[in-house]
Amino acid sequence: MFPVHRPRRLRTHPQLRRMVRETVLTTNDLIYPLFAVPGEGIAKEVKSMPGVYQLSVNKIVEEAKAVYDLGIPAIILFGIPADKDVDATGAWHDCGIVQKAATAVKEAVPDLIVIADTCLCEYTSHGHCGYLQVGDLTGRVLNDPTLELLKKTAVSQAKAGADIIAPSGMMDGFVQAIRQGLDEAGFEDTPILSYAAKYASAYYGPFRDAAESTPQFGDRRTYQMDPGNAREAIKEIELDIAEGADMLMVKPALAYMDIIWRVKEASNLPVAAYNVSGEYSMIKAAALNGWIDEKRVVMETLTSFKRAGADLILTYHAKDAARWLLE
Ligand SMILES: [Zn+2]
Image (cartoon, rainbow, N blue to C red; front, side):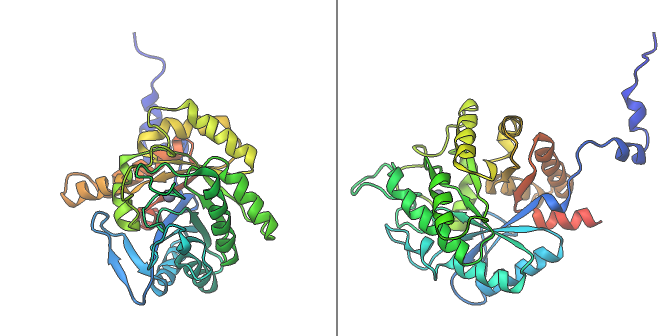
């Protein structure tokens, strides 16, 4: 009995495979994260993230031009302030590092979309994503007072030129608070990309070196989600949609492809996936050891995020991927 159906027929030729390929990665899908530090002429490689640098504003501008020339449509900015305090002043001050970087990039490369990560952990002395009760050593962030800080941060980022506001602190009601703040300040056309389903993940390890945002005590499990939960992700995204989110993010990506898929199925909004630092560093480390083919593994991974439902991928591989897509 010969099989009538032979799926291999459609795999016999590269052109045929190209014709029936269901998912195609393009540079349109990519968002490149950048870390801004105070100073001039600084490009300091992050130890645990080969190829990723903390950059002073003038270097961020150079990098932004390079990113734009590669056809990548957007960057997302994180900031490492000179000083940290309990009020996260560096996050919402008009002279904050992200504000400066956003303004400089928009001046130099007006067509590049600048997304501002809107959180407080890089700016608080304790490294948590908001206000803590005096004497708290567990990291149980006070939700509602923190919303006021996030609102202020988002408005000052929009004023500085940020095109998209991306709140990442997993505070309840943060999308609504920020939407209200932006609207009141005249930024009703500035979209919100909500880190809607963000998990308390060990994959963020290297990022914390890059952003110098490791909590001084406690952890983030009272606000970020438990890795065992999927239905709760749907609850989170439904709330964010109701509060006015324009786009939704799932973070991390690699170990959460099922969540990306569920979020895509459950909403009509664009879905972003954050291919986080630990995912990047694992590939880099293996590639540097000669254990894997970096290009093939990166392209397969990014394509798989898209296949899982991601419309946008935040990734430290963005520049490499854009180059490889041009080959
Ligand atoms: Zn945070």
